[in-house]
Every structure is written in structure tokens, then in C-alpha cells.
Image (cartoon, rainbow, N blue to C red):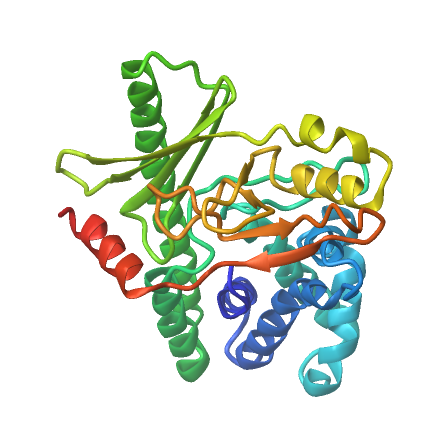
Length: 331
């Protein structure tokens, strides 16, 4: 989730246990503590672009790191609240807020290494977009009201709102999953790998992607409650057999970087249709029906002993925005 929403969730959690005199102090602790895990975005080296991707949502979001992260948060916040809270109280509420960050990110699509260092598996429920304005705006209002009026009730309403909204996301996910398997069955396809997620900033338009044999298929579906789902059939392309294509470079820095990117992309790699020598992450695109990746790595076979470069392709052109709006509105 975006950093502001993380802070709002952390503040809601601490406000829920606050009395009137301490509510504002606990709001501050909750907001700051829940922001800290995402400072892992600062980890990286320009010479190795994939390092940042590997560390994002890794150790700082892991369950094992929560007590340490909470201690850091306590050190940063206690000096501002020590007139109302002792160090132990500050730590306990920092612990509560810090723990919400990793758990909140599991509801999005990128995944979190909750059980690091025991496993590198990323856990993700794909129930909500990394940025969902409706979800966040309601939390802004409720956290603000709780802070201004010093009333715990608004925090409880905030918790209820999160449960209701994520439950709706779960219901939408289940519908999308059923439709994806039905669509594959109509095509005579066997689903080897399925990726379902809401598109950016909403819960109505979903991206359906699945792997059949050695190909990736992308479709979209609009799921409006009490109406018939509208399916948008999209593109398909072959998965890139990078192990075979770059076999002669095995052992080189370039080959190892492709392997790292493949792991980060759940082995769903495709050739970018618009740019030469770009291996893209087939799970993400600007449109649910598109197989034009949002990001990828540039391969330079003339310099196999150098790290690859990481490229992003997130430009929302007028054409893309128009198509997205049409699908979202059911046109």
C-alpha cells in the first residue's frame, strides 16, 4: 500500500486502544511506526538495480523483524510523547502499529516476505490495489475525526471499514477466479498459474492472467455488484524461455540477474512487444488486457559481466486512460 495509507492504518490501530488524554499521542506513534517498514525503498546500489527490488517488502516487513522495527520506532517517537507515555507504553503501541505494515501489504499484489529469513516466499492475497483512494479517503476522515474529537469510536468505525472493504475485495477476487477458470475452460486451456488482482485505484475492474502450456493470457473483467460481469478479452504471448535463449551466458552476471528477475516475477517473463532486448514482468501492465509490461530489464549481450539495467514503462497515455475508463465504466 502507499505510505500514507500505511500510516492511517497504524494510527487507526493505536487509536483503538487509546483513552481521551493519550489519543493524539498514540495517533502520532501509530502513523510514524507504520511508515517505517517502507524505508526499505532506500536500500539499493546504482550498480545493481535489482537489489532494491529484492529488499523491498523483505526483512523490514518480516514477522521476525517486528520487535526490532518497533524499537527503532520507539526511539524516534518517545521524545515527542514522553510527557504522556513512558518508554514501555510507547514501545507496545509502536509494536502494534509496526506490525500492521507487513500484514496490510499482504492484501495487495506484490507480496511480502513475512517468514524471512526462513523462506523467500512472498505472501499476497490480491484483494486491494496498492493505491485505492476510496479506501484511504474514508480512513483519512475517520482518523482525523478521532484525532480532532479525541473519540475512540471513530477508530473502531475505521477498523470496521477496513474489514468490510477487504471482505468486499475477497468476494470480488473469488468471482474473478471463477470467471478466469471458466474463460480458460471455454478456450480448452489448462491453467498452470493464475494471477488475479484489482486494477489501480478501484475494486471493480480486475486483471485476469493465466499461464497455459508455455503462453500467457491476459483478460479483464468488470465486476459490478448485482449486474452481469463484463469480460474484456485481451492479448496472449509466449513466455520467454530465457534459460534456453541465454544458455551460453550461464555463470555470467547478466545470466544471474535474469535469474533473480525471474524469481521476483514468479517466472512470468515475456519479451516486451514495444522495446528491443527488454525482458518484462508479464504480471503487470497499464491495462488488464495488455501484455505490455510496466517494467523490465534491458539485456546487453555485449557486456554479460555487467549488471543489467532496470526500466519502467508506466506512462499513462491519453489512449491508455481512455481505454481504462471505458472498461471501468462497462463500455
